[in-house]
Image (tube, rainbow, N blue to C red; front, side, top):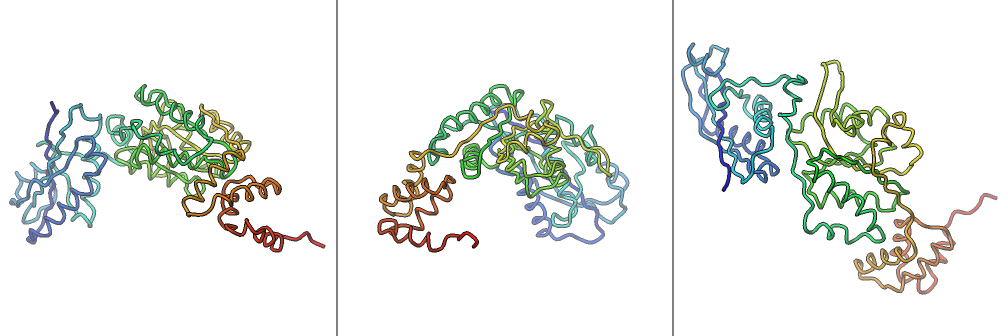
Length: 383
């Protein structure tokens, strides 16, 4: 039997001129569709338009709806937020939905409306950065995470990495089984092309994009990370930090708080103190282990409690990888052994380079033409 309840939000817009129905309808539809996302609907929440009307702007109505502007009319828009699910809603979902609605409704694209009532009670929008409201635990909702039945299928294209994939899965399962009280964040360490990013991307595909927040450490700032985190009404449970050691240490500072067992971001800015609950599970990828260990005085490395190291793939694994690539291109498996022989002889171990040689050489591997061309076009030592 499902748990069902409906909440009504009333938005107001004082006006001296008449508002057309088609304009109000467009505002209501835009606000409804932008507020009700896929993640919320999967958890049982939905937002529907409850209609609109207009009332006289008098003292009584201004008091009832918290309107301070003395105009001719007050337009009312009603949106209904419904929950229908077998289990109880996640703590903070409703507050987060209304907050998102209140923030967006005030902007011109949504018609510049103001949330006035929630379930018949005057609504006060929390101030940005207010730790008692903006960042209270009850205001935070997280995307549900579960290991899907088809988990293995998302990793079937990877060879020789079964142990690495199991380590990541076990760490995620430990988080799920403890309701994320245990967040044993993972660092994937190894040279480029060894499968680190492939595993991270496959985790995102398996769990769903809404459950994962992917961050390129080379392309973000600390302020940008905090801003993006602060704008998420429903937080992902997993964050993937790509090439962590290439980031400026200022960029990784917010992640120290996220990685800490308390799971929060604390930051003092010119606008005040920001405190945000962020109990996320982190998967970081790292090429330069020594550099990573020195970052943030060693704090970043120590907070990744599951350390998974990668080596270059063996000839057998490379053969499987090339077989996969050759079949995708409807090529010949006869290209594989000459490619591997050449790469072994010349110390080429990056799978990306091995794949490129195999697929570019193609049938010319069989005649020796590709090897001759490589020799003719290789960098010659300075005389």
